[in-house]
Amino acid sequence: MVLYLQGEVLADRIVLDEVIFEFVIVNNAFRVNAIDPRSGTEVTVIGRPTEREALKRVAKRKLEYVLTKRRDSEISR
Image (tube, rainbow, N blue to C red):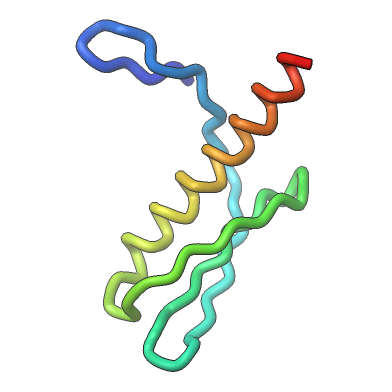
């Protein structure tokens, strides 16, 4: 997928179809782990327990960002 802003290409980023989510309540915080089942890459975001769906979106986007950066760094080697 290519991301556009005002007609310009910003990045060719990875978009995942499948993500495994893990939810954990830690004290007054809600931790969401997003895992790519193919690579095993995992990222974590923490927020308020009332923001479950927003945290899922942020965790998925963070995982896509990490995978895109990893791919780009491997390409540039």
